[in-house]
Amino acid sequence: MVFSQSTGSGVFKSLNLPASARIGALGGNQIAVADGDLGLAFFNPALLDSTMNQRIEMSYLNYFSDINLGSVHFAKHFSKVGTASLSLQYLDYGDFTETDVFNNELGDFQVSDVIVNLGLGRQLDSNFTAGVNLKYINSTLANYTSSGIAADFGLHYFKKKSLFSAALLFKNIGTQLGSYTEGNTEKLPFEIQAGFTKKLRHAPFRLGFMFENIQEWDIRRDSEKNIVTIDPITEEVIEDDSFVAGDIFMRHLIFNTEVLISKNISLRIGYNYRRRKELSFEEKSGTVGFSIGASVKVSKFHISYGRSAYHLAGPSNHFTLNTSISDW
Image 1 (cartoon, helix red, strand yellow):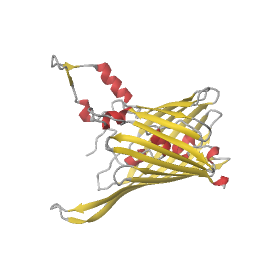
Image 2: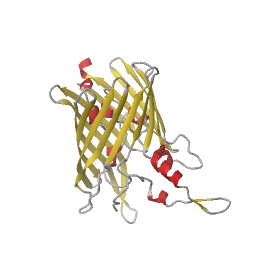
Image 3: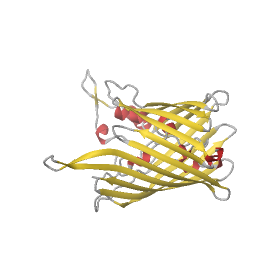
Image 4: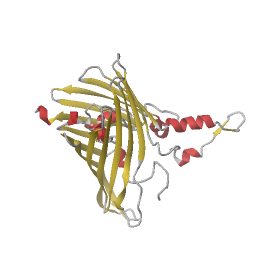
């Protein structure tokens, strides 16, 4: 079944997974920091610049159960064109047991997604850069396959004097080339995002927040829209439109902070309100929605780790390693 408007429906949701350790540590999204990080540029191509020339980055995400994600990115700067990138991402959902209607085992099958991404970023003037990603997606579900193409268009603004940056991203504009079953075409997870960061001049902090799913105001699940609050004394329905509007607005936001201890060491923390609201239990929320991480430079390598709490069953772990070929 396909729903016309819902951030929970559609195909190729692996396009939105936080593949790098830094993104995982910052609450699942950050598109406004331009400091030579290829993992961020994979999501917002406007972040591609000459500082990424001949840089290579590899990431691994230990998601849940047997689900694992690996990605590799490479960038090359061309003086008359801009900075181009090539990325490959592979998501393995693990092995599954196939059975018939009588629960007889017929064997095993695999599920996987592959994304090939070509990116290009170009400096427009001293403050603005623009970029585009072109993506090919192939998904395999046992004997069923689906493919698609998508594009991202990003714009980045940086004011060096005030250490402020902002970004706007139109993400996953595309279509299926072939569906899993004939006549059952699904929509890609199109999204409009905006991000902002501010580096404090006299303190080692970079503050940021993301505004996701701008294209749709109410992104609550259908089951949540029908929930009513009852006064325990009068047993009357409590109607508080201001609280509902505030809850809907907060689901669009991700807050994150980076502590820049030194040129080679940084700590990261993020908070995803929507993730906490949708995936935690009222009786025990724990750290659901929070994420942490760190980065350290050792010799010619940058090593990053991110830990994201999705629910009480356990966190996901992200690892990223990047280096510059020119350093060798």
